[in-house]
Length: 85
Image 1 (cartoon, rainbow, N blue to C red):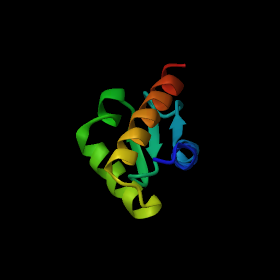
Image 2: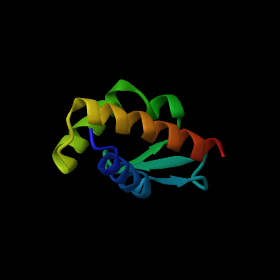
Image 3: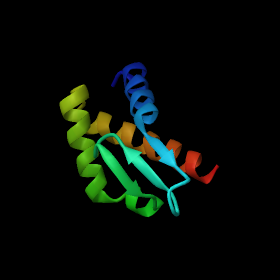
Image 4: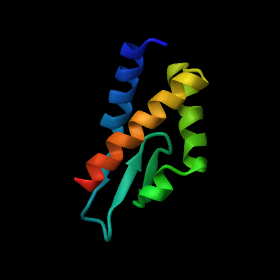
């Protein structure tokens, strides 16, 4: 597993994720869904979103399951930290 490449993928996905605190209770743009959802940290890390994330990482970056799991775990940690402030 090339962590340097995976960290660049992670940085790209994080940079494409946008949090909008001004919209009602807040919403987040998830690039792997290509749209906004109301933010709820439980929802963001749910298995259904992991499926979308997996497809995105396979199709766009050519990652395998082990690589996707690494990026997913790191991504969720970063996003949770950003939202929690």
